[in-house]
Amino acid sequence: MNPLISIIVPIYNKENTLSVSVESLLAQTYTNLEIILVDDGSGDSSLNICQKYARIDSRVKIITQRNGGVSSARNAGLRIASGQYIGFMDGDDQVKSNMYQTLIGQILKYKVPMASCGFECAGQILAAGEGLMPAKQFLKRNIKYLNVWNKLFHRSLLEGLCFDEKLKYAEDFLFCFSAVLRADKVFAGSLPLYLYNKNVQSATNKSFNAAQLASLRAFRMLQGKKEIQKDRSLYRALEMYKTYNMVGFLRSFIEYNYNRRTVIKFFIKNIRRNIFPYLFTPYPLLNRLFALSSAVNFNLTKKIYKVISRPKRIV
Image (cartoon, rainbow, N blue to C red; front, top):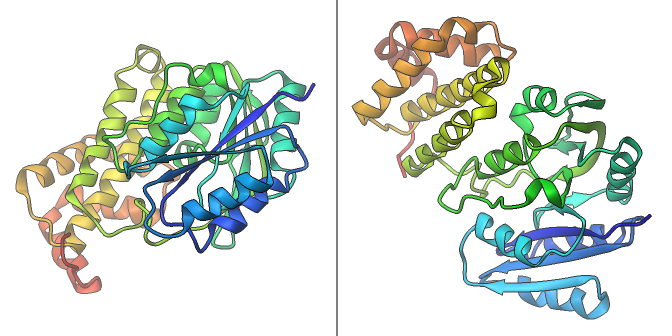
């Protein structure tokens, strides 16, 4: 049994990395692939590179559109994907030659609708758990790493789902969490088969922009789901991860001189409400200490932080 796998690749100005990325897909040991390259209004030679590969390999399909962002590009790919299974890759990353052979093998062996693998980023290998596990357990253990690109989904998990094009941050998290939540069990692999290129120009690595605050809507949407409200431990895991993100935002407020008082008060209120359970989470110690200090006296924390971290300009 060799079901068709559709792999969706959003592309925007990736001429320097795209060839290596696409060739890593063409070199897969699992060959029954549909490779969907979505050119999201690139201003460089990305589209020409896509067309070159479409000419030499019939598995490559091309979508061209005006620039709408990564979520818009992924949604365009989802609309035409015909595979029974669907995966995602970014246009500046790579996959090892046995990635999809491994993932589809695990899915078929364990009769699950989703499998994931570890990934390598900046020389660090990241993976949480190994083996067959309940989907909710997977979500709690991997909540910091809910990216779509190191996973393979049965299309039934994605039915009716789309990436939220209004979110510029956490749209990946929202989509992946919603998809996995539909499963009963999943398989989590630890082999680092996906090579993630941490691009400092990407949406998740750019300097702070107040528009990023809208990403917190992803948590509200998830925590509003009935199945999550009924599962106290899953709801709490989301609340702790939201607190972790809020602490990160609060630090950015100081670094970039963001001084909107109503927003800062809202963040401090939420961090104070969760501070005691948050102190006992496995999140980084410095993050937890910053949360505690901010909850006790944010103004003093701000003064101390400014001494050790030169504030940057808000964008």
